[in-house]
Amino acid sequence: MGPRNLNDTPVVLTMLIANGLGFVAYLLLGPAMVVGFGLWPLGTEGLNARLGGGGIPGFEIWQLLTYGFLHGGMLHLFVNMFALWIFGTALERFWGSRPFLVYYLVCLVGAGLIQLIVATMAADSGSIYPTIGASGAVFGILLGFAMMFPNQQLMLLFPPIPIKAKYFVILYGAFELYAGVTGSMSGVAHFAHLGGMAFGLLMIIYWRGQLPIKPRRRLMR
Image 1 (cartoon, helix red, strand yellow):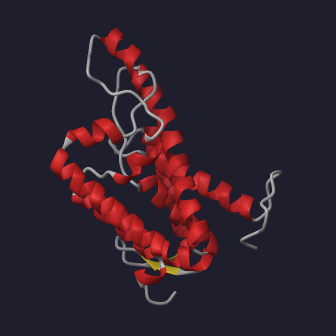
Image 2 (image 1 turned 135 degrees about the horizontal axis):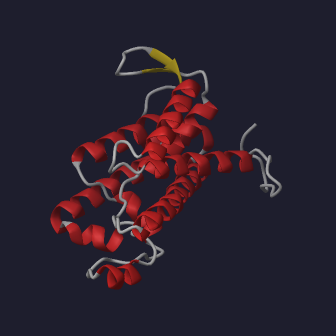
């Protein structure tokens, strides 16, 4: 795939910087960043009154974008940004910067919409929590990479064996679905990850002209 030089992938570079600045702001301002810019469930004002609580933020439309630039810890940030660098640079060079930016934002907002539904359902039973992180968009990038470079060999860390990108994404998606349905690994937004992949798939199918609504020009075969 060639060297991953960020000079010719300005969108990836911008996203890395923006997420880094978001993390610094979180370190400086603390929970105030999550209160204002994390993704909160729908209808929390009514839940506050019903549960006798107070001070729980409500959903705002901008949160569908801003939640993806906040991370709760250095490991969370590093894993997402490392994947963005490794796989995003290949996609941005393959598609071009403008289509890649559109794809990234569609995956990010799409993942947020799915997570908003899941979190709102959880809030109805009294479990109210915000969602932060770029993981949904990153999972969309993983899906896009596997579809554009299906036979590219990846090296797993555990176990250290090679695997083709298409099989890696299939297995990872299956694991996320299992974890989301069973509720294992609590605190991880599994359905946001799946939402990012689902919206990424829809975007690629749209670009290929395989949906009833056709693009002005096809970007992929």
